[in-house]
Length: 417
Ligand code: LLP
Image (cartoon, rainbow, N blue to C red; front, side, top):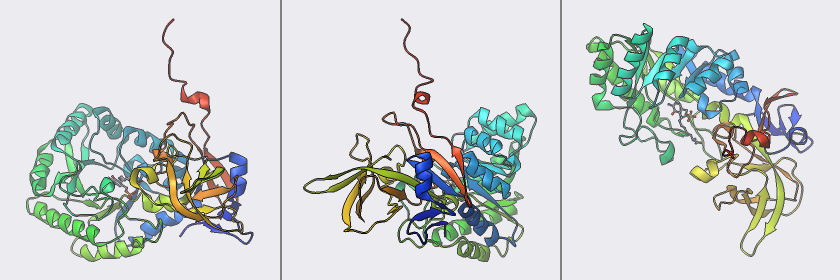
């Protein structure tokens, strides 16, 4: 559930503010987030596992605006990061480094050093060379690095191939069969402390079974290791819980947690870590865009809007479907439109074959835009990136200003005379 609803005046609001007012004040394209929705989604995870030791580590990549991170940090959230940049954002947002887990296949020595200095909770290591490097960096600092190994459980997440990560031929994680020997290596290296085990099998999962299959495999591995004297203190089940973009019915965090807990009866002291990104942020945001032109051709009707694939690339990149709704609906005949942007690419569309009643100047909201929206935007076609607004009740806070054109080439240089 989210706090973007049509109110009595017939208009779409964010919490206690009409979205049309925000578009007038701040211009379009515009990302608008709802604090109450972010908090609600975070609490849904936290409460789902309330009676078990746990940590919710929001996946920063889904939406890394420091205003968003700050809202979650104030709730006591942990964070899942994948770069030194995300680590600095967490710090800038007031997040606690001791609640940070560091994922990703390509951590540099500099990133490891900074994370060790800040004292993060755990490095989610994905290969043996990474273990060796981490051991070396930790030795130079005279620190012990807490380590989890990302295990590839070889289960099919049944999601889009680009966001499926738990199969054998993915670049991610350590093959299940090789895990014991890699754990032995981690145990031997003097500047590492084995603390956990993690996995992340994919994103936008709408069924519980793949999660449970992966968990069962990992729990079996934890038992094998225990018999060898290697104790795992936390199990990080990754992110990946899907959301409703159209008619998907993904499990609620409470249903997911219940199914997990049923598997953990023999592992009551194992701390559980979740890395949700999309499930917290996606439906906590919309992107507003205005219709510039209506263009009718023999075969198609196009609504050319002022947002483009540089602002929101998911439809182009994954053929993702996101709901697009009028902010101020009006009566009239609905026509099927392709909603396209001004970029010079055929793939520049936000939605196809949408039944809408439109006039030039109308305001549209692309829903479920809070995750993998702004963070994946670019300056392609020298388009300045959108502003981002956080609505909190009747207040609207600018959490990112609209980019000025001159900023786009301020770090570029002409050749010498
Ligand atoms: N943990 C790890 C290690 C991950 O790689 C990811 C996402 C997450 C957690 C968070 O997953 P979530 O709960 O958000 O599903 N750009 C794509 C999604 C890429 C996800 C990459 N990894 C999209 O727009 O659908």
